[in-house]
Image (tube, rainbow, N blue to C red; front, side, top):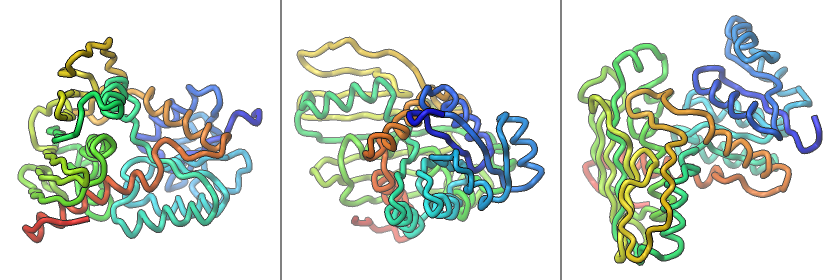
Amino acid sequence: MSKKELGFGIIGTGAIAGMHAAAINACENARLVAVCSSTAERARQAADKFGVPSDYQIEEFLKRKDIDIVAICTHSGNHLEPAIAAAAAGKHVLLEKPIEVSLDRADQLIAACERAGVKLGVIFQNRLKPGYLKLKQAVQNGMLGRLLMGTAAINWYRDPSYYSGSDWKGTLKGDGGAALINQGVHTIDLLLDVMGEAQSVFGQVKTVVHAIEGEDLGAALVSFKNGAIGTITGGTALYPGNPERLEVYGEKGNIILEAGKIVVWNVPGSDAGLPDSDVGGSGASDPMAIDFRLHQGQVEDMVLAVIDNREPMVTGKDARRSLELILGIYESSKSNLPVRF
């Protein structure tokens, strides 16, 4: 490999690892060199699937000198330990959302990467959808004026087999919850990215359809530090599942996204050519009904962050904000009181 091409290793070889592998292999400046699974048998299967050397002993895997960046694709509640090990081995870390399932574990993960002097990036690929980029640019340019309200609706559906076929999905230890922290976190991240930090939240979650520990239904009212308000609804019990929506309202107009595409552009004096690409897709009813191209964008960004010695597009601290808000919704639901940040 040239010095402008970095080697990737993937820890965790479940479904999302295939997305990462495709994204890495599509990049001119990145190459998948090895994967690490949880058992010897899974490692053998992964070697056949990904066409690269595979291990099941993370210590041996991390000794590879051709690995510059480790992509962590383990379940949400198992990001911390492999991230600490990777950072200690001097590897940069790119991990799947959410960053972890508790603020304590997220903070330990962030601190470990800072101590080791390695980059930490978190996958929130929907930030790269053309429609969202257009919306964010309009907000940053003041085209909507003062922000008044933002809404995120992730009213999705998952078949019962989605949970029954997994030993971690929908569990508190492995998933941290369910519909909001796993499915809703992407759009909640966008809501915070465009509206700014949350000041408080009042929320309620319920488990009404699926036999899981976490919630399959949730709603919340958010107060933002800039004075705006917002709402969040989400679920995996809402058959058959609708495309996720992000709505942003300002004094001068509003913009609405559906599955990342602009469906409403009420910006007086502006009809700047709207991107109508649906790159990325939506996981409204099928978690794998997305493609790897947006992941590819984040992989490319991570490589350049390492080469140029800058922060990745989404840092650990950025990713912590959506986790904090979702955990605040859970806490509010238990206490029936608002939670302030």
